[in-house]
Length: 348
Image (cartoon, rainbow, N blue to C red; front, side, top):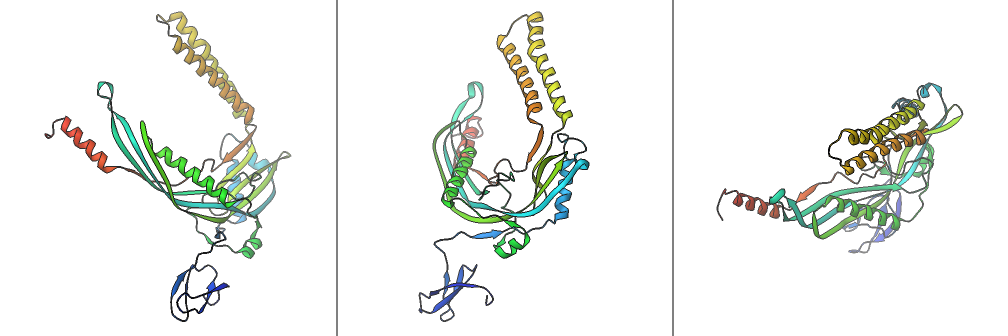
């Protein structure tokens, strides 16, 4: 503690002595009366950094594996590609975690046929939620979300990061970030609480904590026959989290031919066969066949049209947390007792 950088000093509330505040210590002890105090700043956002565990050579190996990882990428891309540049960047991400609580009251449909009925149901949800988003413009890299919740973090050391790579500065408002995170949390909890007839819904986010985490990313730029592409490798795990490569012409042509062939067969030959040999004409079924056939043809054409470049996103959707679903046990117990009475296990 003696080697720590002292940021400020405060007066002890008991004896009035001056207490030095070491950087990064939320609890300080008065050297005169041994009173411990909790320090909480009114301004400022905690900053952390994720360590770099992947070397440049390992990142280049991940890049090579990515180029041969799927049939949607042109064959021999790995051998024909030329490395243009590879460098390390530290991108700041807003990281918010909190405890989400949700209560849903309503009715759920049980049984089938004549025995179908609605029974009262209470659903409670309790989850630890995580949310993160880039704190700067990352459209150039294509990585708006990363996985932070299970990564080790260390106090932010600006000089150390600048020695290792290119460091981006955060922009935007933390108030707006908290608002977006709360909206994402509430939407997630609403999806977890599903009832056939919902009467009341309560959602609360308890103690959301905001921090700024600098995450290491290896940016690898390469060319294939004069066309420039880019791959982003996770600087901690070594996996490719974003990549762009030339699309396979064989895959595009096969998707177009097969989509048109199967689509036309279902949309044209299927209804023609039913009209010729069917005894009872079902116009709705014929219409469904036509729509399925048209859908297959459109699907094949879209693959052919928009797959000139293969683009990969590791984190397309935001993963909010593992979650845990808790059912209201008192209501479940009442339903179990009522069912047992109906089948005659015991009398009322």
